[in-house]
Length: 249
Ligand code: NAD
Ligand code: APR
Ligand code: ZN
Image: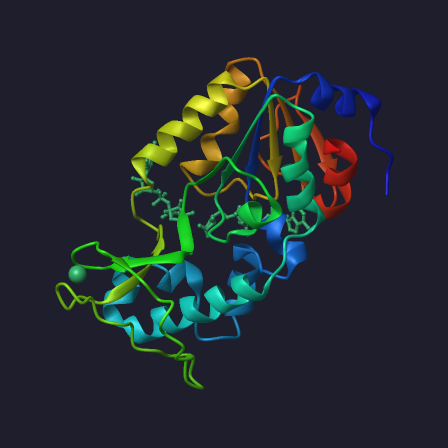
């Protein structure tokens, strides 16, 4: 692809505090479909994550939602970090402080070796009781969804409530502590690299704004031009797996 402008590679090397803000696109090359792709695919399958990944959808049909998340959890467990995750993890050797703020619910940043990762939308490998919130341990469970993709959620030992995925659904509040941490990182960093997000889902999509406002340089990495780009942002159009190993290492 195109060559990387030296001034971007230098901007990374000269930074003292880098925030890497990631969306589903950073895991695309690990074989995990992005949400917008899943939405398009949903036109042909029964399950539309935009419709059913909600508390109302879960209460209306717990087996369908729990079955879909079980399939997605298996996909995450079988996926491997890709060169984008690895380049982000290796950045800590070059820059004094690196924070990963992700909208993703997979654990690929952690498995690539990033040790400061904040999940704004929860984590699919964590589950809790829908009613009392008690964490639920799934390691003993091995049931698979049936041919309709349905699977009854396990019941909470403490109160009998249904187990839900530990992710933020549409219309739900984001974890307050994670949001505050992300906002503080955005206003303190001197460089934000926004990777693989469509920038259309709020409040996460706001984060480049405080970075702009505090004078940080923002670099976007995405095959499509993301919406929140101001004239002094840089945009690397193309896959994260090919740009980040050149930009970050
Ligand atoms: P939305 O427009 O309904 O708003 C997101 C939620 O964040 C709302 O409840 C809003 O009150 C709250 N919020 C707004 N500003 C906030 C702030 N500063 N701090 C904390 N919370 C704030 O968003 P949406 O499109 O309905 O989706 C809700 C969230 O669920 C999104 O972040 C979305 O990415 C996430 N989601 C996750 C999955 C998944 O499978 N992981 C699926 C769908 C949606
Ligand atoms: N490298 C970089 N970016 C990519 C790649 C790639 N290989 N492949 C796709 N992309 C980009 C797409 O161009 C798109 O802009 O990744 C983005 C994926 O956008 P979404 O599917 O909307 O994912 P995301 O931005 O993370 O969605 C935000 O919405 O559905 C909710 O909670 C869910 O966290 C998700 C949130
Ligand atoms: Zn319970």
